[in-house]
Amino acid sequence: MGEFKVHRVRFFNYVPSGIRCVAYNNQSNRLAVSRTDGTVEIYNLSANYFQEKFFPGHESRATEALCWAKGQRLFSAGLNGEIIEYDLQALNIKYAVDAFGGPIWSMAVSPCGSQLLVGCEDGSVKLFQITPDKIQFERNFDRQKSRILSLSWHPSGTHIAAGSIDYISVFAVKSGSAVHKMLVDRQYMGVSKRKCIIWGVAFLSDGTIISVDSAGKVQFWDSATGTLVKNHLIANADVQSIAVSDQEDSFVVGTAEGTVFHFQLVSVTSNSSEKQWVRTKPFQHHTHDVRAVAHSPTALISGGTDTHLVIRPLMEKVEVKNYDAALRKITFPHRRLISCSKKRHLLLFQFAHHLELWRLGSTVATGTVESMCLLAVSPDGNWLAASGTSAGVHVYNIKHLKLHCTVPAYNFPVTALAIAPNTNNLVIAHSDQQVFEYSIPDKQYTEWSRTIQKQGFHYLWLQRDTPITHISFHPKRPMHILLHDAYMFCIIDKSLPLPNDKTLLYNPLPPTNESDVIRRRTAHAFKISKIYKPLLFMDLLDERTLVAVERPLDDIIAQLPPPIKKKKFGT
Image (cartoon, rainbow, N blue to C red; front, side, top):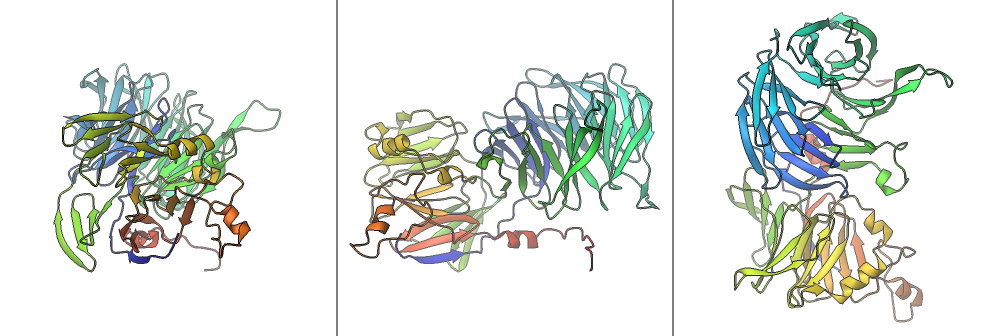
């Protein structure tokens, strides 16, 4: 790899916003995530959990609810009282509709996907019909005395459950009338609290309603009689979120203590058909409140104030016990936030609502920023490569202002691309960790790219769980490709042989002399460094100087609100 002078930069004061809502779409295997600044992100779980789309937030939008509807349509609602539908193709807001009930705290789509419910500050529950072009108000349900903080449909679509302050209401959808009102015990650790907030409800097929509340309880109710069936006290603080699997045999809840609990429906005895809900697994992957959870067929998903999106696979549901079964924790965006001017030694930092331009040691200016697609311009200024939200890449001739060629389609989204000087070869990285080299003048893949696709990448390379976000080239060594993700920096030397699965991938020792046959035999094209992490940006300033921008997680945690302190034994 050689020796470089490194500018180790840690003054990029980037702090991701906390996660407020998550919504899983089983049909497309995609996850929508909304953050406290109003940003909405779309993750493709089939494409190595890649963040393929995002909608920039706005200070006027505080999202409190997020859900998918029939036809892969995404809706959100929040404290500004508006229901928003997103255009997933144009990547903008399709329209916004005022619900006229004050701030919206909760939202739920009917089992058939054609109706939308919202719960409002004024105690109203409003039903909207989802039409092909928009949503249309249908009617109000019986108004309650306090805000509606949580909603859930019965799978039949005939009834709904609504969580409020101190009670849960059951409504008949056909009439809009409340048929039951179930008061929740305010007792918390033997002491009566002033209020008990119902943060989440789930309505099961057998008529059971599961509720989670600010008293740290998970409760099971019989909706037919309006009575409490079972109570679990699981936390010394609020239980803030709940999600149930499609089969209704397990559910997950998140607490303000940062703990995620998994409940499963198990047989009372080995030979019995009678089943009961049992708390089986607690997970502590968060430091702060777990504000949102989701339950996919194979994983438990959680997010909260600490900004981490945690995906924990259910080992009993994963067919092949390989790297896909490992815990994933996503903290940073899957796109480049930093650009570098090599000649002037300038760094451009992208924040949510402004830009910062730095010369090493001083701040220069700020400005505004908008979301963009992946773009790459050739050093000679003749070619422009562009990638949108799909996996396609188009190459344009800048001088003639027309399409030159389209790179053959690939199944996984593009995470980074760059055009090499001199050769005008386009290097493309995808979310499944594949890297392609495409000759723009010849309109075909290069021989090196065909060789690496024929042999295949090393299995440890393919098992990395963070996407490549930046690609560059050595100014004096045309055979070198430089790229990085959040946890490694790699130089690919195309003049060396490719590693196979039996070869040590990470940092084989270089040969010390011409007679060092063993080390020379194991030397290969991939030179990897894991010194700098989390790595948001790395590039060459000149042939002997690197700039590396890191964002330590401890620095982010230090800027978050303090977590709930839990007393530990012996302290």
